[in-house]
Image (cartoon, rainbow, N blue to C red):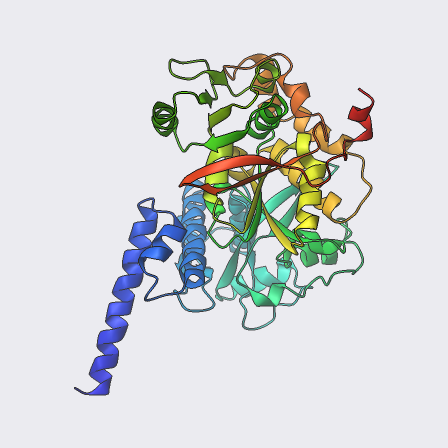
Length: 442
């Protein structure tokens, strides 16, 4: 058979397989599971990075539709081969679009709530000094632009500093070399320098880091810290303090009860109001009075346990809150990790208390002597804290918020891994005598 015919057949089959990969992912199959299904054809990185771009494109379409801007641009993904980017191509007619020059700014505003912004493609000009106006000029000239997924870090003044989370754009990795001067959030050039950087830790000489929500976990995480301040991993820390031997993480209530049925001596814990079959409530205020010596706890929560299960196969996965922040940072340092993914579990990665904890941990990893006060203030004034105080979250104890804001209450980190097919959380003591001075005095 002619080689051209064979090539056409091969390319047609490849396109069909990529389409099937996309459909499977959009049907709800996790990216890493899809990667396993097609492992003989494509590498894990190819699939997970392509599907990250697909997810980014889908969110962009939703954002534009909600803002009434679906007419303005076409959203596409370049494909499963490099560079595996999500792109935005102008579609509006300049002569028929009211205030056409403001269109890029309106698009950027629509994308902001979805933590997405615009950048230049890898071809052409794309250095760290590129400004929004230059990107807008390219777009208005009819050129496609690159969609970038961001993770918001709240600054002290309440503004949002965008941080790029792209894992597959090599050009970003050297934009802010370690040891370079700190970024000035008031400087347009430095804001752009931060934007073009793939890791949040590079504006100090510490560990490279990024922050994602649970929907953005793509299976490529090697070292991950899953954060649920209010309340899963504050409750878990208290459970270990009260003597629990291990905590088995369940995906849903049905799985939790099925595990308990196989192990009648284990205790099941869930968030919300107490229900039949569950022995404990996801509340540090309630757990601190429980006798859990030598017991195994099965924990199911809305966000924290879901995030932990998403990264359980990483080389190192830790679960964290303010209560174990210092020990978590030490565990990462002791492991020799040079990069880390923080998974902020609340509100798809937008929970103020989880983002505050992630930024606090990032500063600890940089070796910075830092006052936790501003980070705790953000957590204390978060919607989650308000829900707990007001009673809108069932199964809450009056002391829950303040217990969630105790920094370094415990001297252990919490490591999750697979054990006989189950995701098991255990305390990890990096320095047995390293209790904070505050709590040593208690």
